[in-house]
Every structure is written in structure tokens, then in C-alpha cells.
Length: 93
Image 1 (spheres, rainbow, N blue to C red):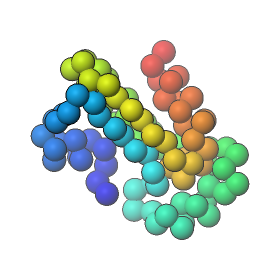
Image 2: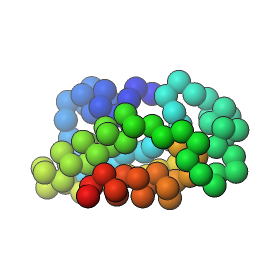
Image 3: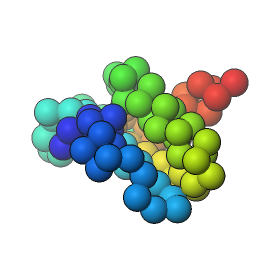
């Protein structure tokens, strides 16, 4: 799939009263490769700053337009979903 910002551009903005962002695997990486890379899912194996930045920008845009924003994070995106979520929360500070 395309990066988050590109997907949003292709949709021509927000189309609903909420938006969902799914952070799955690193761009151009297969599910199996991401699974192998992240196992045993106990730490961030590679921080993805562009993914985090796009997530925060799109979330802030959604909230600014009075839309709910839901961000679902998979362990295979950076290696440990709770730590990725904490990293996103830290960006809000």
C-alpha cells in the first residue's frame, strides 16, 4: 500500500465523521519478513519516523475537522505496538 499521506491524498480528504489509520508492516516489506524481523515483539526493532509523522499529521487534521481518529498499531510495524503507541503519544507532548 501507499504511505498514509498518499492514501489520504488519493481519497481527497476525509469522507466520514471518523478516520482509521492502520499501521501494519513497513512499506515494501512482506508480512512474513515483518513478522520475522519483529519476533519476539519485545522492543522497537526499527523506528519508522515518516510513518509516525504522517500518523500524527493525519490524526491532528482529523481532530481539527471535528472527526474521531482511531489509530490501530500492529506489532509488525516497528516491532512492539505498545512502544509504538507510546512514541506517538510522546509526539503529542
